[in-house]
Image (cartoon, rainbow, N blue to C red):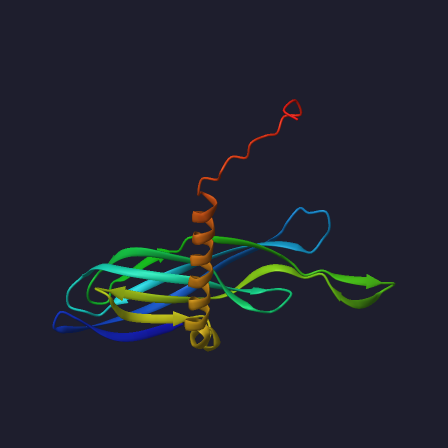
Length: 189
């Protein structure tokens, strides 16, 4: 897939194209019962600039979007950022994003050859991605695995940021020193 966006860097307009390849590896985990899967997900991103000058401080931000197997709700599972320099005049620069691993199961119960519809699905499976390329604070290009994720991404990102802030606040509160309780001795009574 290719995504093109134009942005002004200095006085000239720079055009950056993205070429994204999904590197997905799904393996059956050694578990007590069949059906549990371990998914490893990464992206190989090719950046090509058609500007006359090299772009030295290009920031590639990426988010992996996962789906809860029970509720079918979408979440931002992982976010990352890489800084890279992009050469001028059509030279391609490739980066590989950090891999993310998730576990999920998709087992169905069977009863004498008939499939019962009691689903034991659990975990989160990565379904797609959103990539944004920035240079000098400006958005140069954006790419998503589907239009649905591209449209829903602002809402998903806001929800992810809220959850991240809640976790940071909870961690901060858990590190607060607590008052020590005096132990009552049975001899004092």
